[in-house]
Image (tube, rainbow, N blue to C red; front, side):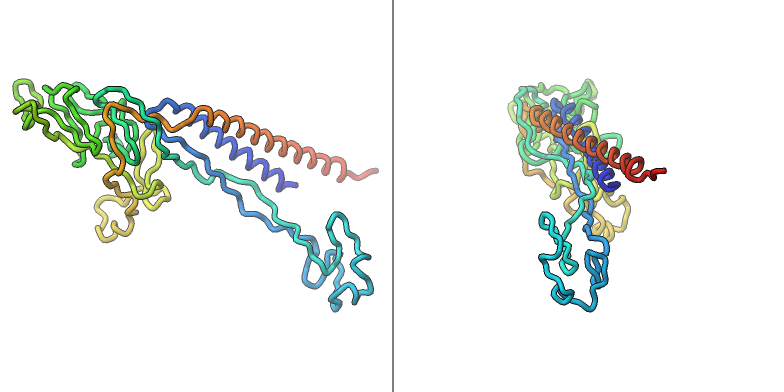
Length: 334
């Protein structure tokens, strides 16, 4: 009886956490580039149910039957043994009662990297990713990765996201648009290369900014956006603010520390956690919406609520049975 109480309680805990995950998905339905979370359930190890006194030298009746090996040797038959709904009390027949589940728990919060729908905005620095890939941005905690391509040019010409994190190029440096280049003349191709007019970029001491020079009818490559992917989708985990960070060996451990012996570091670092050129494509003037369906999440929320109520009812039933067992069945009459 206690097992049933604990099993139902673990179900309530799991459904409560799953509700939190669904609520977070709904809250981020309008977040650009957001990837939904999925609560993955896992069952505790089952318990094999055995009958009392069900041993090799005795039967279910609790009587030592040795040296007899059959009912005929005992002077009886199977028909003489009580049978109720298929249950046989034959001391030489040990029925398989089965296994008892002990509840479940949330094994992990997995990320669904499914493609979100693309929306055309016409803004020069709005970048959507079609397929696999991440943008790299510089944060106070180091390089982080995101699918949110809503960038803008600040007053100094640097491309940044809404939180002021600089978009990085393949060399790890921020991307800066020349001050004399109009936004409409900036072209960003599918592989992340940034082109601006002119033949060269020079620093203008008069205006105190970098500017494009030469034939402004030509296009020159200014930078290459750090557009990467990973060999294993478990190589990144969510940090918050729509950012991802790299983990090592798929167990949430950070990458090997800098300065470690290179021979040792090669063994410690998960090769699938090393950024590599992305196979997806960047679309300029568009944004990727979240991959969340409000209708689906609401249906899941209702379904989850019903499961929680069912487990709560099971807990109440178990509690009532325990109360009867202690106060009624187990009571002694005077």
